[in-house]
Every structure is written in structure tokens, then in C-alpha cells.
Amino acid sequence: MKTLTKCLILISVIAAVALSGCENAGTSAADTASQQQNYSNSQQQEPVSSQQSTPQDQQNASSSSQQGTPQSQQNASSSSQQNSQNDSSTQEQTSSSGSLSVTGSVSNESGSTSDESWALILVNANSPLPEGYSVSLVELRNFQYVDERIYPDLQQMFDDMRADGMLPLIISSYRSPEEQQQIIDDKIEGYIEQGYSAKEAEQLAYFEAAKVGCSEHESGLAIDINAEDGDLWEIYNWLAQNAWQYGFILRYPDGKEQITGITYEPWHYRYVGKTAAKEIYDNNLTLEEYLGQ
Ligand SMILES: [Zn+2]
View 1 (cartoon, rainbow, N blue to C red):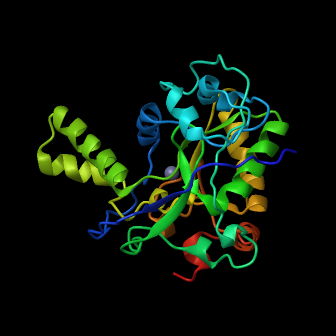
View 2 (cartoon, rainbow, N blue to C red):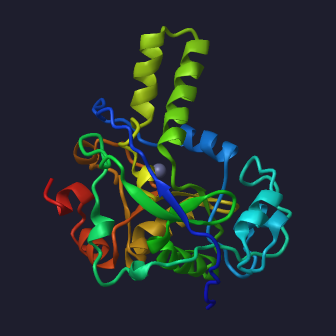
């Protein structure tokens, strides 16, 4: 396999979480499919690149084509893409990719094996991120970012999926509080345009999107995976069975809505570290149950 070339920039982001309380309605979908789409259109994709050009990366990659050179992706990314509007549309892809970018300094704790407590932070409607929560991000491609500590396992998971013939694509990853608020604002605006009152629009928007500070995406530990091409359910099924080996869990399982407060999201994976992921998978738990919440 390839070793990842990491290079780049280390971005330290301080997620100023404006917590306004995340109480939310019962089961709302933190990321609804539609949201996913919007998001995807707006920004894009993913991560992990492989060395071979997998399609996925491609779109993105394509333009930037990287062969993995570390260089900066930033550049790469910026130059490239105009973004693809749909994930699949263009498949032109070039070759390439290797991308991922990543960051530089891997602080001392790049390893995820020793102390994985950092990966167990609970973020939901009742447990917003702490104020001032900060995360060191690694830029993937196409303006996607994740906590640098999950990058090695994420890259390995994508490499292995590709080796099995799938074309996974990350369509949403880290979101800043501002981005989360924008998603909410866009939804409210959309409902108002449809004729709903401001209050109704807000209620509907919060049913679909988590309040600022309450979305796991703000932690940098969650990713939404789609397919650049091919059978999306093949990817979902693979992830459901194998993601735990890389430290990721299906965060919002079918049938656990009463516990997570979120409807089933087969695309949303959360990094919790390999030890916790195995236990959660083996015992069919949610993160809330695992943490005793
Ligand atoms: Zn998600």
C-alpha cells in the first residue's frame, strides 16, 4: 500500500462553538440526505486519495491531479476545481490522485492507538461541543477537512475499499460553526420561499439540521460517504461490516433512533478509535450506549 504522503499544512482551527443549546426536536436528522446533497454541491469532496486514481478522487483530483505529492494541496485544490457539481458527473478524471493531504505536524499524538479518549467525545443535541473546542485539521482534497488524528485510518479504509473495487467519496467532513449555521440558514430560507412562516421554516430547518455546536461534523471526527460511481449500497454494506476495523462506527444505526435522536444515516461514519469501534460493533451499541449516556 501506499504510504500516505502527507505534507502540508496544518491548520489549527478553533471552532468557536456558539452553543446555543442544542436542544432539538426529537429525532431529527442531523444530516439529511438532502442536506448532503446540498452540501455536496457546494463544496466538495473528499478525501482520501489513493494512489491510483480512483475515481473518486477524481473529480477533484482531476483537476488537481496530484499524485500524491504532498505539496500542498491547498494549492492543488484551489487551483483545481471548480467544483464538481455532482459527484458523479464528471468522470473525467485524470489520474490521480493521491492526495490527501495532510498536514504537517502531526503532533505528538498522531497515533490513535495509545490514548483514544480524544476520539470519544460525544456530540449530540444534549451534548454540544465544549466552547472553544479546537481541532487540528488536515486538508483532504476539495476543501474537505478532518481531524488530523483520524487521517491515517481514514486513508487506509479508503485504500482498502478501492482495492475491493468500490469508489467511495467523502462528500462532507469537518464543518466550522459558521458552515453549520449556513446550512441552517439556507434551509430556513428555502422553506420561507416555499411559503412557510419564519417560525415554521425555522422549526423545519432544525428538524433536518443540528444546531451549531451540536453537529458531529464540527468535531472533525465525522464523515459522510457517498459513491462517486457504482453501487452506493455496496459501499454502505462494506462500511457497516468493516469500518470498525479502522476505528469508525455507523453513528446513527437503523432502529436506534430513540437513543441517538437521529434517523438512520448509512452514510455517516464517526471515528471513535479502534478499541471502542470494535466493542461498539461487536455489541451493536451506539456511542451513547457505549459511553453510558
Ligand atoms: Zn454526517
